[in-house]
Length: 187
Image (cartoon, rainbow, N blue to C red; front, side, top):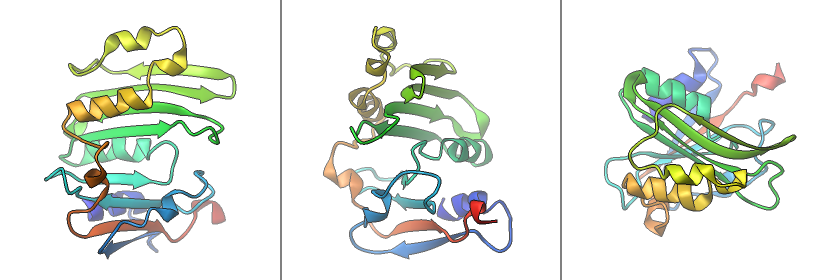
């Protein structure tokens, strides 16, 4: 999956704009805690969590969680993707939470989000609701309460992804880091 994602990010362009590295030991989260914006070089960590078996987890230093890239990835490769974005820090100028489900090879697609934008909070949902969703939550009067950290975490747990456990955030073996070596804006 690392090579597939690196190829998708590079888009067949030479010279390669992204490199990948295999690392051992504890995952260094420092590069992912810097300011989250398109001005920073893209960094992606990918690993198989100790407590999850045959899945690959991914964290990127982008506020959208690489939404477009993962959507294209799910249409291109035989993989099912779950994307969660939780931005509830008081320091985040545009907080919000989102959950997305992309079935492999362009199958079902579902996204729900409650996000702050310059003109106020917005609730967005696309695709058909899935059986694990708590649809009544989307009727909350305050938009920010419709999709929350707790809701996104519960959806992931219902799908067998135990992100609340420390072991989820530890690699069972090596982990990969993909880094941008050339900024598209630098041209």
